[in-house]
Length: 251
Image (cartoon, rainbow, N blue to C red; front, side, top):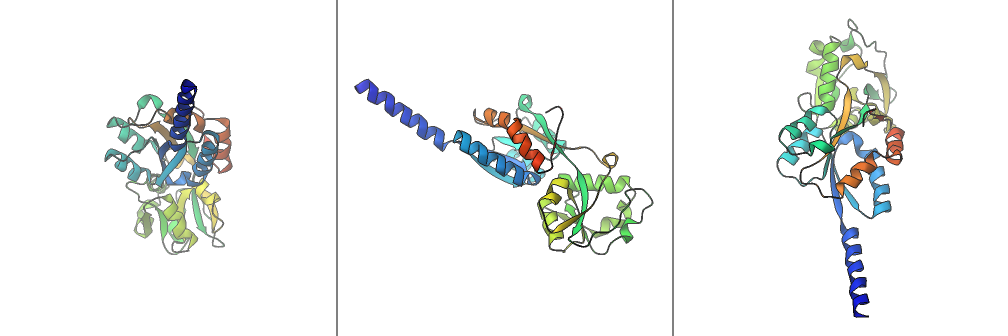
């Protein structure tokens, strides 16, 4: 009887420990909606709580560098994942290219305009006011935006009208409120808002591929492996697709 009670108590402690387990996921702001839905399903299926920190990949990478306790990092570009890998702060063997996205031009609802994504088009004259995107030096969407504008020959004329935001969702919010008449964001961000119009899509040839690498940090909990596997499952991928993400063929 005594052994039975000890065994039962052990099971109880294990159950409590499992229920209290929590993983911390640092992820690019553009993943907010899709990843929140995926994690909610994962919590219901496993009992493991998922805490998110959504922000610009640059901000999150710097936080991890400064000791923030993250189990997984999902970046919106290769640059910031490479940054952490070079500093031996992510588990290289766990790294995978998970998703891809598309760079688009948006305007406040009802204020769309015609654009030809080609050199020689007078983009600077196509609209009035400011253009919002992520900070062009550090935030992935801003880096992609500058690259595309430069390759189209539009950068020199438009750069003085650009407002850089702390992340892609900040740029989306400015356009939703018509504080910026144009924005450069990801297609997935445009799709979650009913307050903007999709003006057009930047040709893939104008910028580097928009990729989302994922990796466990060097200090991640053992249970992070299972969550990383779940992110690559058909169930999770269907949710990512629902929000407009493309699945990287080599994930």
